[in-house]
Length: 528
Image (cartoon, rainbow, N blue to C red; front, top):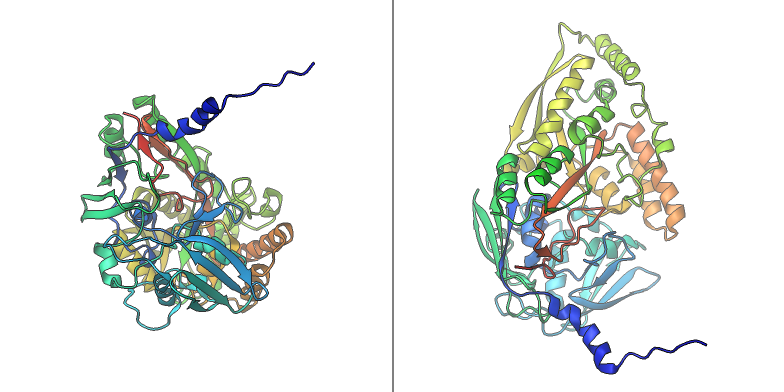
């Protein structure tokens, strides 16, 4: 005979209520930061150094579910929008907006703020923004219209399902209409769970609890303070002595994580893909690098597995432009990757071919091509740059390292003021539209190598309209392979990195396919 178990109503209510009482309110979360953020304006910057400390100030229309470790189009939840729908043959995306939301200065949030933000991002005119690194994301956005204060519609030229995914990422906050962009760089105003308090150059960033946050009961923390500690050994010492509660996201390779766990055995650490990848930048418009033969020889010098072993003791992965599987949803399978020249195991054969090319151009071991290799002056850039310099020697290229501070680095890239560089490209969202258009479209500000291929851009547009995941993925693989064969921007290695936090830090959920999208901190609390 089956027994029927009935839970008394009071016990059922108690069990449902228990999780809500588990969190403790109060306290300051202290996080180590790797370098000085170039500004607080997420829309003008292209670095996690800005997103991680400032994302908690803002809100998006929608966001990736902060409790889901896989960012994807299937894990999108409301934020400033309460609902949305596609209309007009999937060319119009309409959002109903949350009522009663206020900016940190007390002014009401309305549909006008959404329109102002995306008008700025898509505009060809001077909008006050000094940089617009993701303008290319919205090439297909025809216009934004409002229907009263609580409804806004994005009108597209053609169907593009990934637009919703782009709006969910950490790079897509809504800005206030009434605040100049220049102010957003130094004293930003948002609607998010935390308010800007202060930013001291080369010292710290501090944000404090927004007591009027529209999501009642959140955030739990009183404040978050980021202390800028450029030296990783000093940063680890600060963590092991509990002067900071959390390391900067993805900033440690496997050996460093092992050392930290030896010093702080109770630490909670996760080693995950960052969806940042080291890549060789060659400015195709600057002689002698306008010669495709030289660019090919440089690509032939790369031993990708050496980077994996030296930098991460085998945790990082070799891949094309898309994040390798299984963490990446769009990366080429290994058997397809192995068919691309330069990705196979015979490195010496590749280098012999590269050296032959250079000798044919008059560059020998005694008379090498002398270059300056620029990179950003932080360890995650400098370390692979040093290895790359050694590998370029194998094809008669003698490189001298030039390391640049963060603000100077991004200015030089934007102005194409370099010949050869080692870049660590951060990709906000694991979606082909984001990666292809942002990195390789002729009109993209982040197409740092000035790569141009109209035929491949047509293929970008074709895959962009596809709704069948499996069919689209195969097209994406084919495009990715063509980009590698064309030497568009040689991908060296996809980075994995560790993030650690003290055991009393609760509610941290990291994404396994991007470091950019989980930094609201509204569910994080301190159990002490």
